Image (cartoon, rainbow, N blue to C red; front, side):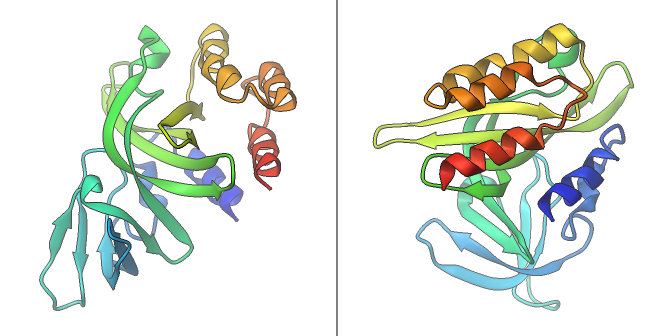
Length: 210
């Protein structure tokens, strides 16, 4: 189900608003917000996925609307979509295809793709100005998270972005050290080309989590 949803997002990747595919992007949808103390509140949620938007929440259709930044919450759930508050990481967005520079993200919500004993996998949507098209576009990244007792390490990988092969190979380099304990994953990443199915790698990571 997740893969088919991501494919539908990718079909709109060149359009400025692919995040409209989420049910809560345009209208309020039933769900629950999760506070940092793990308490939850049910109601209606509206959030357009990108790093600058605040989540809108109301307890009912006639209730007052409150706004929450990603750093104010632990996450939220709408239907089968589970989003988690994420902080201080870098992704591949508008500056990478031309300049080779990654984009820093201070706070946003990421969609939980898989949660395991070793890694967590998220889908993150970041918006930015595309100088070639002259429009605001959304950029999708898989974000891999590895936690220890002392710190949290992230590694991102662009999903569906257009770039030359040299930059695509460079984008894979952070994943080599991130998955250094799993040579089979590293080898699969090294041989992966832009036209290949990256979900094969996602499945390998999921297997290592079990």
